[in-house]
Image (cartoon, protein in one colour):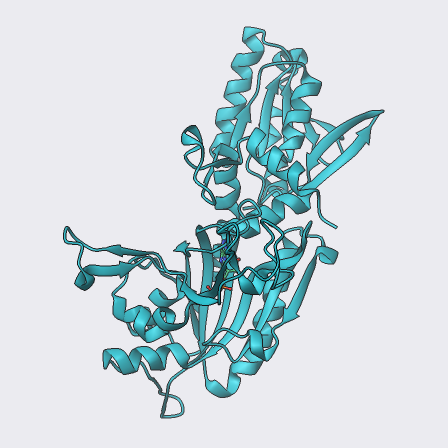
Length: 435
Ligand code: GAP
């Protein structure tokens, strides 16, 4: 069972991970800004995803496609006709709800009245706007609801220019937008969010095996980054749950305080998207295999994760409260690769000599990692502050450091301390703080 929801939300706000968007104007519901620590952690999550998907593989390349695409893209993909949720409105209190998410489909959770809902209507989730200075129907464009379509429309560009051979993948991280009927649970469901998606193109007959490989590989990614195995499960979709493009799907789910909920979907999208774009654009997106002399439209296996949602889950999962010598401490046991600050450098006192040495040590470490320097309050309080944001190592510069050129390195999890010569500090920390 994961940490209490309110505790994490309070920590996130208090320590500058996440702020309400437009807070000084009363806040914009369902939109959030990532503060100094949040932006580091979110970037680290994306970086680990990119590293495992692109950097460490020779069969996957990256892409950064536009948020606004031709409306033909959404016509072809089926998003204009089918990307909708069933919306009901309560006739008593006018609250709007997503029918498929209601615990009791007959009772309004806002006012508690039964039998007051209007007939459900399909509400399209895409944000609509206009391109250029004229607001006419001819200029309507949409903000992308998934990054995937930019990958499909660039399939041939990427294949040709990067000289890729099927099977290969194209990965992309970027913003997506959905006009969710009921956003909520802090950053879990928002109207603007970051996705990390990869489309892996393969031979149709290999799709089932490739799908299983990606299900295993994505499960391992979360575990390798320290997520508690009991808080993670892989759930196969029932046929009636499948998206309009999918032949099979497995969700990576996390045990949130409100129950199991989705972090990522892995889907077999078949040749649905490439064929749909071939038909609408008139362009040939089939693949000629020079080894077998066959031409075919590849199938696509897609692991699609939410970066903001996943960051939230890592934050929840890392949260711990411990008793140390009769005192309680809050500690984020984040994998060092995800921790927003890797090392805090702390002078034992504000004495100018110590502070000067502290800054020298910090500039040396800054070449490699994100570093914090904290000079105020007692050393115990400063350790607790760093524990609470998950800083894996604190380096303390004390009075002896000025004579012996050594510093004390404290480990966040064990709280053990090692005395290390300054000349060896980088060599000591490097294996402990991998990229
Ligand atoms: N291209 C496939 C696709 O977009 P999805 O399951 O709708 O599939 C993938 O989205 C992931 O994007 C989800 O598993 C979730 O992590 C994230 N996501 C979707 N809607 C979101 C929202 N409103 N707020 C935050 N994250 C969201």
